Image: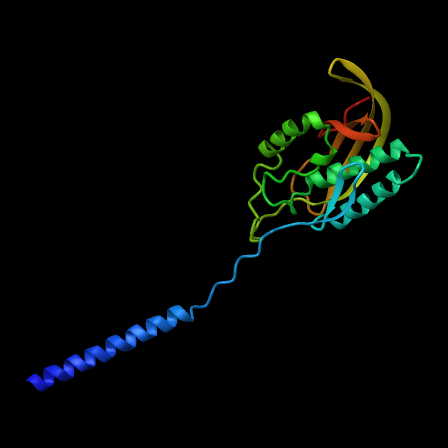
Length: 212
């Protein structure tokens, strides 16, 4: 009996050693899971004197419009009507192209907004247009989101705008726009821009065409 008992102990001891060694080897050679790729963007172009930037994630259409703006603003005699038209296009492209936004807090077109209205505009966007944008921090979003593919300028007018109890010169632009796919988002609008020193800023936007 004692011999069988010793054999049993030896077998159990050997099994314990094997299990322990295998466990240690598994821990030592544990395959590390690759980190998820983060959704990051970088600036590829800018118009430093005006604070305008272009990211690598921006669409081809926006990149084309940005180059048009850069060309206009490098001219010694800036054509402000042309400036206003291209800026209006960039506003629409960046604001309504949600497919390249990281989440609902990643509101586009803020750099074109009148500085005193940026926070209000951003919050309204988060509560409305951007509200249902699913987070895409790790590039795993499965959601159909809009992408602007064309903006047509309908009209450009010099107007007056009441800003803080003062009437200022402004440019009013009416537009309509098209998407890669029609998902029911706004397809026309009116934008009003004012001149701040040498820079145009969006002071008002309405997602419909307003009469003169």
